[in-house]
Image (tube, rainbow, N blue to C red; front, side, top):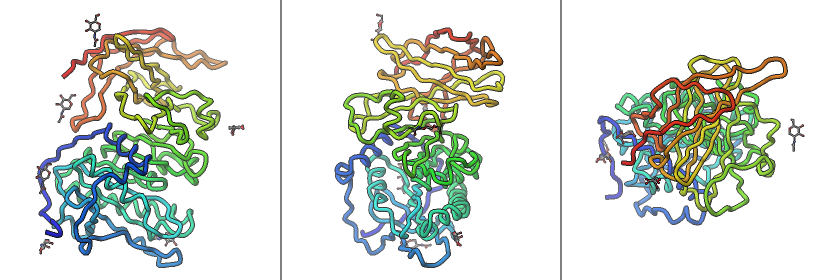
Length: 413
Ligand SMILES: *[C@@H]1O[C@H](CO)[C@@H](O)[C@H](O)[C@H]1NC(C)=O
Ligand SMILES: *[C@@H]1O[C@H](CO)[C@@H](O)[C@H](O)[C@H]1NC(C)=O
Ligand SMILES: *[C@@H]1O[C@H](CO)[C@@H](O)[C@H](O)[C@H]1NC(C)=O
Ligand SMILES: *[C@@H]1O[C@H](CO)[C@@H](O)[C@H](O)[C@H]1NC(C)=O
Ligand SMILES: *[C@@H]1O[C@H](CO)[C@@H](O)[C@H](O)[C@H]1NC(C)=O
Ligand SMILES: *[C@@H]1O[C@H](CO)[C@@H](O)[C@H](O)[C@H]1NC(C)=O
């Protein structure tokens, strides 16, 4: 059978965010030769739809296309009409949905990496992959592509609303936005009240966005979990952090072994100017492309009992019998909650204790509060659909600059 189309499902969804696998997908992309070792699909191509080809002088219509790829046909795009709903297609609403949004395309051509990314995802997960083709709006001059972003985000948002109407849950939607597409993803997330599951920004664009307000650009409020992988912060990439977690990958150096927290020297080499970063900058994590799988990741969160009128920094360390791994949660001014990814070398269930240390922000003219009160929670990644975090069951009082340790009650499965 050349092509399989099935009635869209109206079942409940099953979300299996597999974060580690995303890293694997990214590694496949970072190593182009291995990306090619994925699936090859031998289906006949005549039913398959491809990206459009826009001329940079051409028409002035956005002409957004949504192309669906599934594991049944990983290299054959199925055009989904946003107008008459997703009535007769291979979309499976029981599965998670990944929506890929490309960025500026000066010449109106299809991004060369789309196929590799789609295949790497489908090689790794059983999901619906939807590639958004907006080559018509993305062509010409960069500023005019930027001007089309809001309209595009509305079109994608309407499309997602149609998926939601099929019974798809908001948390099962994962937007992968590249460059300018990262900010489009942010706007789409904003239109959905920050309730979509996950946004991954690959090399989020800098020009016209570095000084934009959080409403205009990608920010942590745009989804339950927002992460950004910066690979071009010295050129077209954005220099400021835009997610709960921002990775600044040093593309050049291949380090065997585990991710490391990198020093400000390294940051300068990676094109990141420390002195220009705003205060809510968190820890920079470098993942070695050759061995990204050797650490475990947990999302750690601290909720203040009372908002503060200055930035709050809390150092979090996970200790096991033989390891101690640390990250710093930063809670922006006038906000209650700060989140951070903590990379640790043993599984969460082998972590015996968590140590919290509140680092006050003393200013010349006023000392910070001597202690803070709040709640600490942790969830191993990948997050699953219920997205429950385990919390230490009391309000913690953290005196300044003092290590306070608690047992971490997480049992091995
Ligand atoms: C995209 O932006 C350009 C530049 O502002 C504008 O001329 C064009 O009409 C826009 N396209 C759409 C579909 O809005
Ligand atoms: C659904 O798709 C199948 C296969 O492409 C086609 O034969 C059928 O007519 C379509 N049904 C509707 C209602 O569009
Ligand atoms: C949709 O996905 C679920 C979960 O993997 C699977 O059990 C079901 O068979 C799929 N439905 C179709 C029509 O492929
Ligand atoms: C970093 O930014 C600061 C402030 O904008 C500037 O003074 C400094 O020269 C920059 N350093 C580098 C290496 O670009
Ligand atoms: C850690 O040390 C304790 C006491 O020596 C031992 O009972 C426990 O099995 C060790 N845990 C691991 C994961 O090695
Ligand atoms: C989600 O995680 C919770 C806590 O880790 C676990 O109890 C639950 O079984 C998980 N649910 C799924 C669907 O994996």
